Length: 200
Image (cartoon, rainbow, N blue to C red; front, side):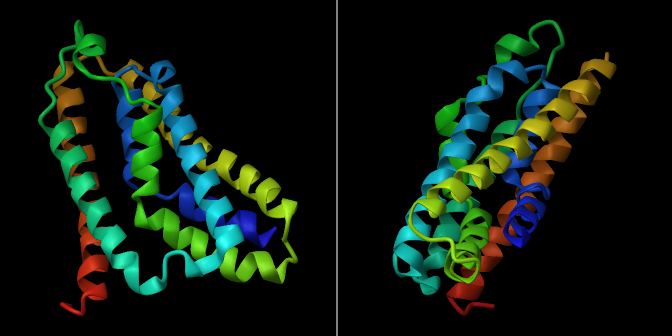
C-alpha cells in the first residue's frame, strides 16, 4: 500500500508532464490528448519493468544528473513553445499541434522525477514487499495507470477552466504562467545536474 501512496503522491504533484496536460486542456484539446496520457503510462510501465527486473545497476545513481540535464533542456524547449504560442479562440484548435503518444513517452522517459520515483520503489520497496517475478509487472502496470491518470486529471481540470474563459488574452496569460512553471521545473532538473557534477 505504501508503494501506491508514495508513487501517486509524487506523480500527481506539479511537474512538466502535468503542466503540459493542463495546457492542452486549457486549449480545448483534452480529447485529442489521450495518446499523450497513454505515452506517459507506457513510459512508466517500461521504466518500472526495466528497473524492477534489472535493478539500479542499469543506471547507477551517479549518472542520474546527465538524465536531469537532458530533461531540463527538453523542458526549457517545451516552455519556449508554450510561452510563444499565440491563442485566438476561433482558431485555437487548429493552431496548436496536439500532444501525442510519443510526446508523452519521451517527456516522461527523460523526466528525472520519474526515475527518482522508480529507483526507491524498485530497489527498496519492491524487495521489502516481496514483489518479485510476475508481480513486478502487475504492480508496475497499476502504478503506470496512475501515472497516466495524473496528466489526464490536470488536462480535464484545464478543459473545465478553459470553458469558462471567453477572452483569448487570458489564454495567452495562462500560456505564459504555464511556461514559467515549466522553466521552474527545468531549473530544478538543471540544479540536479549541477549538484551531480559538484558545481553547486
